[in-house]
Image 1 (cartoon, helix red, strand yellow):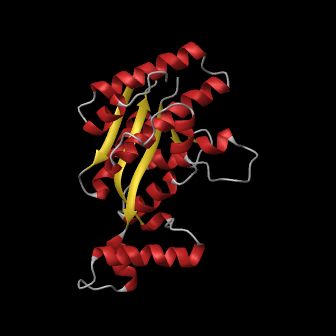
Image 2 (image 1 turned 135 degrees about the vertical axis):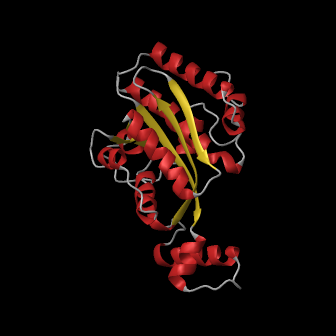
Length: 229
C-alpha cells in the first residue's frame, strides 16, 4: 500500500508581505493592512481569496496513513512558518506519500511559501509534479464538471461527519484534514478499492487516533464524532 497524506492548511493574509510590497509603515496597524489586502483582492477578482504567495501559513494539519496501514495525526503550528514547512517536507521525505488535497489550493500555497523561505523540498516537488503523487479529491469526485465551489466542510457534514462545527476557529486546519480523510475513505469505497467493512474499520481507526492524541484540537474532533458515522 502507498502511504497517503491528507493535507489541510490554515492561513492568514501575509501582513509583512503586504507591508513590503506596498510600503506600509509601522504606524499602520496589522488589521488595517489585512483589510487593505482583502479589499484590494475583492476589487480585482470579486472575492477575498488571496493568491498563493500572499497566504501566511498558520497551521499545517495532516492525516497520514502509512504504507503498513498505521494512522498518525500531524499538526505543525506554533513555530515560525519556515519551521512548519520544513517539518512537513521532512515527513514527506520520510514516507513518500501520495498527497491528497481539496480543490487544488493547498499545494500552490505550500510551493510559493517554500520558495519565499528558500527551502529545499525534493520529495514534495516530485509528488506535486507527478499525477500519481497528488490527488485533488474534489476534482476526482467531479471529473467532468466545470463548476467548482464544493465546500469541503459542507460535503463532509452532508455525509454525516462533524466537520468544523465542533472545532474552535484555530482548529479548522485539523477539522479540514479529518474531513478530507473521511471523504477520501468514502471515495475509495465508491471506486471499489475499499469494502464497506474496510471503510468502517478505517473510520474507527481515525476516531481512536483522535481520542488518543495529546493535542486538544484533535481530541475535540473525537468528542464530536457523530454516533452513526
